[in-house]
Image (cartoon, rainbow, N blue to C red; front, side):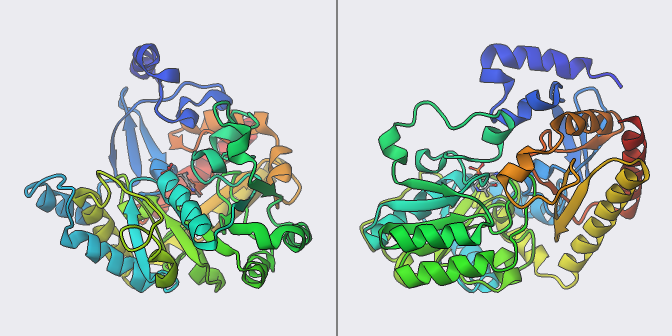
Length: 427
Ligand code: PMP
């Protein structure tokens, strides 16, 4: 497999863009590789600058649940582009997308569109602080909520991949009110809330963690977050940027039957265009300007192209059988991956919730960030490189999830499992 053109493009990019990339994990540093430059995508596949073809399990880090260039999204985008690309004024499309989210996620009575997951979580935290009049926020180690200053503490995703503790440029005073606790540690959480609960504005959590690898909540964890935040008058924020419309039609909150006060969305809600959103109970959301005094705004927020892509995607996801199909495909892939490892005496833990999946090179169960960091990162890096060589495009870090789309066929999954069998034998 030649990647000469990608290498040349990467060289040019590195002269002009820090690390040659516009988001750190894309540089593939932790897997000892260089990124391939993608030229196009179609259904479950991406094609690089050297015309190599890959089965894509990154899917732009989650948004493309229908695969690349689904006809319904392309059609919607073509229609809108003929009318304009941005107005900075209200459009009907914004209300249409809001209505769809409100219909599918009952805890959301009102919703505000922004441009990224980072903006969604940042704004939700500001709203929680404004609403409660409190300053302290609680998050969990290894969860990533975007790169807003107050949330970049013990974070997952690129921060975990690069193994850096936090980021320079964030004054201590800015994060002095951020507490990061152990994910899935019910007793630890209750203890801190008993001490400080009346000062806590909000608890923000990825209901299924996806930024330290995929780590589901243990029984009782989310239930306890709900019960104890209610007791102390703190808001519970579900960061569903990754899990929203991914793990189930009603998102993680629908799947687990927990009602958060606020929810953050991104990725799928924009159908592959830049979108984020935050929403929740009317009474809380009406504290946002211009109704209330908590300020948040955006030049391109509610962009018509992004709204149209989101509407087309969510409309497709309302069809019967979609989530069962996604779940079946993912179950097949993960079972195959587990067998490939078992057959070759490689310690591997696989798991999935709907079409959000993950695998760790370890023999131990992974319940939190400390467990995830104990995995064999070298083995992951080797596996990643062999799979890429065999035409399977995985996220280039042990601390990321992988995703399937409706466009992934049985044949794609069989090919991936066959590649994994060979890769595990080569490890
Ligand atoms: N929250 C979660 C759970 C995420 O996974 C991400 C991004 N992967 C974000 C927030 C930030 O979203 P964005 O990259 O769109 O700013």
